[in-house]
Length: 348
Image (cartoon, rainbow, N blue to C red; front, side, top):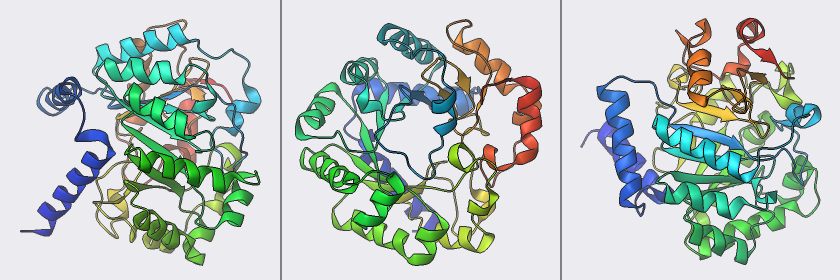
Protein backbone atom coordinates (compact mmCIF):
# COMPACT_ATOMS: atom_id res chain seq x y z
CA UNK A 1 0.00 0.00 0.00
CA UNK A 2 1.43 3.39 -1.00
CA UNK A 3 1.84 6.21 1.53
CA UNK A 4 -0.72 8.26 -0.41
CA UNK A 5 -3.37 5.57 0.01
CA UNK A 6 -2.51 5.14 3.68
CA UNK A 7 -2.85 8.89 4.26
CA UNK A 8 -6.17 8.93 2.42
CA UNK A 9 -7.50 6.10 4.58
CA UNK A 10 -6.32 7.90 7.72
CA UNK A 11 -8.09 11.07 6.59
CA UNK A 12 -11.28 9.04 6.06
CA UNK A 13 -10.90 7.73 9.60
CA UNK A 14 -10.56 11.25 10.96
CA UNK A 15 -13.66 12.40 9.05
CA UNK A 16 -15.53 9.38 10.44
CA UNK A 17 -14.54 10.24 14.02
CA UNK A 18 -15.60 13.86 13.47
CA UNK A 19 -19.18 12.80 12.87
CA UNK A 20 -18.99 11.66 9.26
CA UNK A 21 -19.45 7.97 10.00
CA UNK A 22 -22.51 7.85 12.24
CA UNK A 23 -24.27 10.59 10.27
CA UNK A 24 -27.77 10.17 8.91
CA UNK A 25 -28.58 8.91 5.43
CA UNK A 26 -29.86 12.40 4.58
CA UNK A 27 -26.47 13.94 5.43
CA UNK A 28 -24.59 11.38 3.37
CA UNK A 29 -26.84 12.05 0.38
CA UNK A 30 -26.25 15.78 0.75
CA UNK A 31 -22.48 15.17 0.83
CA UNK A 32 -22.72 12.99 -2.27
CA UNK A 33 -24.66 15.71 -4.10
CA UNK A 34 -21.99 18.23 -3.17
CA UNK A 35 -19.26 16.02 -4.60
CA UNK A 36 -21.28 15.52 -7.80
CA UNK A 37 -21.95 19.26 -8.17
CA UNK A 38 -18.38 20.37 -7.55
CA UNK A 39 -16.35 17.54 -9.07
CA UNK A 40 -18.53 16.43 -11.99
CA UNK A 41 -20.50 19.58 -12.84
CA UNK A 42 -17.61 21.86 -11.79
CA UNK A 43 -19.88 24.22 -9.85
CA UNK A 44 -18.55 26.42 -7.08
CA UNK A 45 -20.58 25.80 -3.94
CA UNK A 46 -19.57 26.74 -0.38
CA UNK A 47 -18.82 23.45 1.35
CA UNK A 48 -18.95 25.12 4.76
CA UNK A 49 -20.75 28.21 6.01
CA UNK A 50 -19.34 29.66 9.22
CA UNK A 51 -22.22 31.34 11.02
CA UNK A 52 -21.18 33.87 13.62
CA UNK A 53 -24.03 33.81 16.12
CA UNK A 54 -22.66 36.45 18.48
CA UNK A 55 -19.52 38.47 19.16
CA UNK A 56 -20.02 38.15 22.90
CA UNK A 57 -17.48 35.96 24.70
CA UNK A 58 -16.24 35.34 28.23
CA UNK A 59 -12.63 35.32 27.02
CA UNK A 60 -10.40 37.98 25.49
CA UNK A 61 -7.86 35.81 23.70
CA UNK A 62 -4.57 37.42 22.72
CA UNK A 63 -5.06 36.53 19.04
CA UNK A 64 -8.85 36.84 18.73
CA UNK A 65 -9.70 37.26 15.04
CA UNK A 66 -13.12 38.82 15.63
CA UNK A 67 -12.12 41.48 18.16
CA UNK A 68 -12.53 44.18 15.52
CA UNK A 69 -16.07 43.05 14.76
CA UNK A 70 -16.92 43.17 18.45
CA UNK A 71 -15.61 46.72 18.82
CA UNK A 72 -17.45 48.02 15.77
CA UNK A 73 -20.70 46.07 15.86
CA UNK A 74 -23.64 48.43 15.39
CA UNK A 75 -26.32 46.16 13.90
CA UNK A 76 -28.31 43.72 16.07
CA UNK A 77 -27.63 40.00 15.87
CA UNK A 78 -29.77 37.94 13.51
CA UNK A 79 -32.68 36.43 15.38
CA UNK A 80 -33.61 32.74 15.40
CA UNK A 81 -35.98 32.89 12.44
CA UNK A 82 -33.51 34.86 10.32
CA UNK A 83 -30.81 32.27 10.98
CA UNK A 84 -33.17 29.41 10.12
CA UNK A 85 -34.03 31.11 6.83
CA UNK A 86 -30.32 31.56 6.16
CA UNK A 87 -29.78 27.85 6.80
CA UNK A 88 -32.55 27.03 4.30
CA UNK A 89 -30.96 29.32 1.72
CA UNK A 90 -27.56 27.68 2.22
CA UNK A 91 -29.13 24.25 1.79
CA UNK A 92 -30.63 25.44 -1.50
CA UNK A 93 -27.11 26.39 -2.63
CA UNK A 94 -25.82 22.90 -1.82
CA UNK A 95 -23.84 23.66 1.35
CA UNK A 96 -23.00 20.57 3.38
CA UNK A 97 -21.62 21.87 6.67
CA UNK A 98 -22.54 24.60 9.15
CA UNK A 99 -20.03 25.78 11.72
CA UNK A 100 -21.66 27.76 14.53
CA UNK A 101 -19.07 30.32 15.56
CA UNK A 102 -18.69 33.34 17.81
CA UNK A 103 -17.55 34.98 19.99
CA UNK A 104 -18.94 32.15 21.99
CA UNK A 105 -21.95 30.48 20.28
CA UNK A 106 -23.07 28.70 23.45
CA UNK A 107 -24.01 32.11 24.88
CA UNK A 108 -26.94 32.16 22.44
CA UNK A 109 -30.09 30.90 24.18
CA UNK A 110 -31.33 29.37 20.93
CA UNK A 111 -28.15 27.39 20.18
CA UNK A 112 -29.75 23.97 20.78
CA UNK A 113 -32.73 24.89 18.61
CA UNK A 114 -30.41 26.04 15.81
CA UNK A 115 -28.24 22.91 16.00
CA UNK A 116 -31.33 20.72 15.89
CA UNK A 117 -32.83 22.65 12.96
CA UNK A 118 -29.67 22.45 10.85
CA UNK A 119 -29.01 18.81 11.71
CA UNK A 120 -32.53 17.64 10.91
CA UNK A 121 -32.28 19.49 7.59
CA UNK A 122 -29.38 17.19 6.71
CA UNK A 123 -26.39 19.42 7.45
CA UNK A 124 -23.25 18.43 9.30
CA UNK A 125 -23.23 20.76 12.31
CA UNK A 126 -20.05 21.82 14.09
CA UNK A 127 -19.92 24.08 17.15
CA UNK A 128 -16.76 26.13 17.72
CA UNK A 129 -16.51 26.91 21.43
CA UNK A 130 -14.15 27.90 24.23
CA UNK A 131 -15.71 24.99 26.15
CA UNK A 132 -16.52 26.98 29.29
CA UNK A 133 -20.28 26.34 29.07
CA UNK A 134 -19.98 22.67 28.12
CA UNK A 135 -21.44 21.18 31.28
CA UNK A 136 -22.94 17.69 31.27
CA UNK A 137 -26.47 18.91 30.58
CA UNK A 138 -25.43 21.11 27.66
CA UNK A 139 -23.39 18.32 26.08
CA UNK A 140 -26.34 15.94 26.30
CA UNK A 141 -28.58 18.59 24.72
CA UNK A 142 -26.13 19.07 21.86
CA UNK A 143 -25.91 15.33 21.32
CA UNK A 144 -29.70 14.96 21.26
CA UNK A 145 -29.96 17.92 18.86
CA UNK A 146 -27.68 16.08 16.42
CA UNK A 147 -24.38 17.96 16.65
CA UNK A 148 -21.76 16.35 14.42
CA UNK A 149 -18.66 17.61 16.21
CA UNK A 150 -17.68 20.06 18.95
CA UNK A 151 -14.41 21.98 18.62
CA UNK A 152 -12.97 23.10 21.96
CA UNK A 153 -10.29 25.76 21.82
CA UNK A 154 -7.20 25.25 23.96
CA UNK A 155 -4.17 27.50 23.68
CA UNK A 156 -1.96 25.25 25.75
CA UNK A 157 -1.78 22.04 27.74
CA UNK A 158 -0.59 24.19 30.64
CA UNK A 159 -3.31 25.74 32.77
CA UNK A 160 -1.47 28.97 33.56
CA UNK A 161 -0.52 29.59 29.93
CA UNK A 162 -4.02 28.91 28.58
CA UNK A 163 -5.64 31.21 31.15
CA UNK A 164 -3.15 33.97 30.32
CA UNK A 165 -3.87 33.74 26.58
CA UNK A 166 -7.63 33.56 27.19
CA UNK A 167 -7.54 36.50 29.58
CA UNK A 168 -9.70 34.58 32.05
CA UNK A 169 -8.57 32.81 35.19
CA UNK A 170 -10.10 29.36 35.52
CA UNK A 171 -10.83 29.04 31.79
CA UNK A 172 -8.54 26.03 31.35
CA UNK A 173 -10.22 23.87 33.98
CA UNK A 174 -13.69 24.58 32.62
CA UNK A 175 -12.64 24.07 29.00
CA UNK A 176 -10.94 20.75 29.74
CA UNK A 177 -13.97 19.67 31.77
CA UNK A 178 -16.16 20.48 28.78
CA UNK A 179 -13.90 18.41 26.53
CA UNK A 180 -14.16 15.47 28.94
CA UNK A 181 -17.96 15.73 29.09
CA UNK A 182 -18.06 15.45 25.29
CA UNK A 183 -15.80 12.43 25.28
CA UNK A 184 -17.81 10.78 28.06
CA UNK A 185 -21.04 11.27 26.08
CA UNK A 186 -19.32 10.04 22.90
CA UNK A 187 -19.80 13.36 21.15
CA UNK A 188 -17.00 13.83 18.57
CA UNK A 189 -14.70 16.47 20.00
CA UNK A 190 -11.67 18.12 18.43
CA UNK A 191 -9.14 20.32 20.20
CA UNK A 192 -8.57 23.55 18.28
CA UNK A 193 -5.35 25.48 18.81
CA UNK A 194 -3.24 28.23 17.26
CA UNK A 195 0.34 27.31 16.39
CA UNK A 196 2.05 30.46 17.65
CA UNK A 197 5.76 31.20 17.72
CA UNK A 198 5.73 30.63 21.48
CA UNK A 199 3.87 27.31 21.37
CA UNK A 200 6.09 25.93 18.60
CA UNK A 201 9.42 27.02 20.06
CA UNK A 202 8.57 26.05 23.66
CA UNK A 203 7.30 22.60 22.77
CA UNK A 204 3.82 23.52 24.02
CA UNK A 205 2.21 22.62 20.69
CA UNK A 206 3.75 19.15 20.82
CA UNK A 207 2.56 18.71 24.40
CA UNK A 208 -0.98 19.75 23.52
CA UNK A 209 -1.11 17.17 20.72
CA UNK A 210 0.14 14.53 23.17
CA UNK A 211 -2.58 15.64 25.60
CA UNK A 212 -5.21 15.22 22.88
CA UNK A 213 -4.01 11.72 22.00
CA UNK A 214 -3.80 10.65 25.64
CA UNK A 215 -7.37 11.75 26.32
CA UNK A 216 -8.66 10.22 23.06
CA UNK A 217 -9.93 13.42 21.47
CA UNK A 218 -11.22 12.97 17.92
CA UNK A 219 -8.38 15.07 16.55
CA UNK A 220 -6.53 18.39 16.67
CA UNK A 221 -7.30 21.35 14.43
CA UNK A 222 -4.21 23.49 13.98
CA UNK A 223 -4.66 27.17 13.07
CA UNK A 224 -1.77 29.26 11.80
CA UNK A 225 -1.42 32.92 12.90
CA UNK A 226 -3.33 35.43 10.80
CA UNK A 227 -3.20 39.21 10.59
CA UNK A 228 -6.71 39.93 11.78
CA UNK A 229 -8.50 41.09 14.90
CA UNK A 230 -6.03 41.84 17.66
CA UNK A 231 -3.15 40.88 15.39
CA UNK A 232 -4.21 43.11 12.49
CA UNK A 233 -1.07 44.55 10.83
CA UNK A 234 1.18 42.91 13.45
CA UNK A 235 3.44 40.96 11.12
CA UNK A 236 5.81 40.13 13.96
CA UNK A 237 3.33 37.42 15.03
CA UNK A 238 3.44 35.62 11.68
CA UNK A 239 5.50 32.44 11.60
CA UNK A 240 8.82 32.44 9.84
CA UNK A 241 9.27 29.87 7.09
CA UNK A 242 11.31 27.74 9.52
CA UNK A 243 8.55 27.93 12.14
CA UNK A 244 5.88 27.11 9.55
CA UNK A 245 7.85 24.05 8.48
CA UNK A 246 8.21 23.03 12.11
CA UNK A 247 4.47 23.42 12.68
CA UNK A 248 3.41 21.32 9.71
CA UNK A 249 5.68 18.50 10.84
CA UNK A 250 2.99 17.82 13.43
CA UNK A 251 0.32 17.29 10.80
CA UNK A 252 -1.06 13.76 10.78
CA UNK A 253 -3.67 12.78 8.17
CA UNK A 254 -5.44 10.72 10.81
CA UNK A 255 -5.36 13.16 13.71
CA UNK A 256 -3.81 16.64 13.30
CA UNK A 257 -5.13 18.77 10.45
CA UNK A 258 -5.09 22.36 9.27
CA UNK A 259 -8.21 24.50 9.44
CA UNK A 260 -7.84 25.07 5.72
CA UNK A 261 -8.42 21.42 4.93
CA UNK A 262 -6.83 18.01 4.68
CA UNK A 263 -4.82 18.63 1.50
CA UNK A 264 -1.16 18.90 2.40
CA UNK A 265 2.17 17.18 2.24
CA UNK A 266 4.65 17.46 5.05
CA UNK A 267 7.17 20.24 4.45
CA UNK A 268 5.30 21.37 1.31
CA UNK A 269 4.15 24.84 2.32
CA UNK A 270 2.61 25.53 -1.09
CA UNK A 271 0.15 22.70 -0.51
CA UNK A 272 -1.54 24.63 2.30
CA UNK A 273 -4.84 25.87 0.90
CA UNK A 274 -6.92 28.84 1.96
CA UNK A 275 -10.45 27.45 2.04
CA UNK A 276 -11.93 30.93 1.56
CA UNK A 277 -9.63 31.70 -1.37
CA UNK A 278 -10.50 28.30 -2.81
CA UNK A 279 -14.23 29.15 -2.64
CA UNK A 280 -14.99 26.41 -0.14
CA UNK A 281 -15.90 28.52 2.88
CA UNK A 282 -17.87 31.68 3.59
CA UNK A 283 -18.53 33.59 6.79
CA UNK A 284 -21.77 35.28 7.82
CA UNK A 285 -21.34 37.66 10.75
CA UNK A 286 -23.93 37.98 13.55
CA UNK A 287 -25.23 41.13 11.82
CA UNK A 288 -25.87 39.25 8.57
CA UNK A 289 -22.85 40.67 6.73
CA UNK A 290 -21.22 38.20 4.32
CA UNK A 291 -17.42 37.90 4.28
CA UNK A 292 -14.94 35.55 2.58
CA UNK A 293 -14.02 34.33 6.07
CA UNK A 294 -14.05 35.56 9.66
CA UNK A 295 -10.47 36.87 9.29
CA UNK A 296 -11.44 39.37 6.58
CA UNK A 297 -13.29 42.44 7.96
CA UNK A 298 -14.81 43.48 4.64
CA UNK A 299 -18.46 42.77 3.86
CA UNK A 300 -19.80 42.09 0.38
CA UNK A 301 -23.43 42.53 1.38
CA UNK A 302 -25.99 41.74 4.04
CA UNK A 303 -28.54 38.93 3.90
CA UNK A 304 -31.14 41.30 5.31
CA UNK A 305 -30.92 43.24 2.05
CA UNK A 306 -29.88 40.79 -0.68
CA UNK A 307 -30.12 37.02 -1.32
CA UNK A 308 -27.10 35.09 -0.06
CA UNK A 309 -26.66 33.55 -3.52
CA UNK A 310 -26.27 36.96 -5.18
CA UNK A 311 -23.82 38.16 -2.53
CA UNK A 312 -21.62 35.08 -2.92
CA UNK A 313 -21.64 35.34 -6.71
CA UNK A 314 -20.50 38.97 -6.50
CA UNK A 315 -17.83 38.16 -3.91
CA UNK A 316 -16.39 35.21 -5.79
CA UNK A 317 -16.27 37.03 -9.11
CA UNK A 318 -13.83 39.73 -8.08
CA UNK A 319 -10.24 39.43 -9.30
CA UNK A 320 -9.01 38.26 -5.89
CA UNK A 321 -10.71 34.89 -6.24
CA UNK A 322 -9.82 34.18 -9.86
CA UNK A 323 -6.26 33.02 -9.30
CA UNK A 324 -5.76 32.88 -5.58
CA UNK A 325 -2.41 31.21 -4.74
CA UNK A 326 -1.94 28.33 -2.36
CA UNK A 327 0.23 28.78 0.67
CA UNK A 328 -1.46 31.13 3.10
CA UNK A 329 -4.55 32.94 4.40
CA UNK A 330 -6.20 35.82 2.52
CA UNK A 331 -5.68 38.12 5.51
CA UNK A 332 -1.92 37.57 5.41
CA UNK A 333 -1.59 38.95 1.88
CA UNK A 334 -1.56 42.71 2.43
CA UNK A 335 -1.83 43.61 -1.25
CA UNK A 336 -5.21 41.92 -1.45
CA UNK A 337 -6.63 44.57 0.84
CA UNK A 338 -6.80 46.79 -2.24
CA UNK A 339 -9.35 44.45 -3.77
CA UNK A 340 -11.53 44.50 -0.67
CA UNK A 341 -11.39 48.25 -0.28
CA UNK A 342 -12.44 48.82 -3.87
CA UNK A 343 -15.02 46.03 -4.16
CA UNK A 344 -16.51 45.77 -0.69
CA UNK A 345 -17.83 47.94 2.09
CA UNK A 346 -15.21 48.38 4.76
CA UNK A 347 -16.72 47.30 8.05
CA UNK A 348 -13.72 47.53 10.31
